[in-house]
Amino acid sequence: MRIKKCLIWRGHLQLRNPKGFTLIEIMISMMILGILTMITTSTALNWVSDRRLSHACQVMISGIEYTAALSLRYQRPFQFKTSTADNSFQIIDAAPYPQSVPPERQNNTPPVNSDGVVVHPLSKNWYIIDFNQITDLKSIHILSGPGLIVFDSAGNAPYADSLYVIQAGDQKRTIQVKGISGTITVQ
Image (tube, rainbow, N blue to C red; front, side):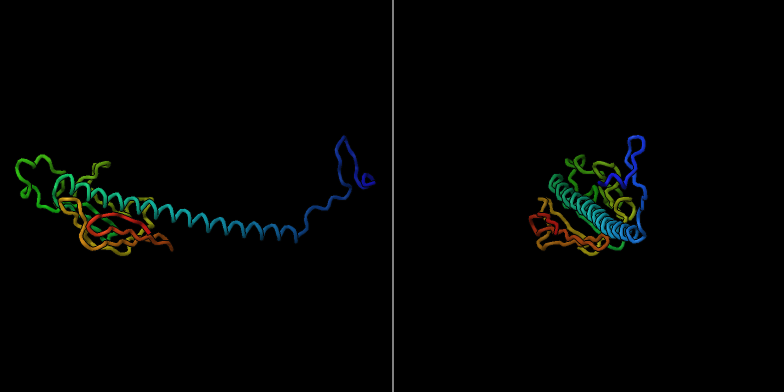
């Protein structure tokens, strides 16, 4: 019987000669934990990078859509202006303000600063989005894209497609604004 090798003491079963773990067993366990940690860390970093990139795309798409909506609402051209050097974009009232607005519609224009930049509807600041200044988007870079998309008074984009490439770490996304229709897709 195996009970001969064990000692029963106060109702508990104990081994007479407990061995513990060997050095090899501990080293194998540590290697397995190290490999799992590397895999988990890599996956977590990719996930964070992907989330930041998705957020940056949403911010940029919102700006493009808002530019088109402004031009349609106010029946005048508005510009979506990007700068790869500054890693930023802004929305500008393209018509000289307020001289080009007929007197009967001057109260129906969005507020702009001296450069024509419109007010952001939520923050009530000028609609200038600088990825370098936003904590969650500091690792995002606008790699390429047209410096300007002008939406006409009907809310239409230019005839040619516009492509923006945005990068976070090793990952890139392309935002495409279809010519004329202004349909936006992300690849």
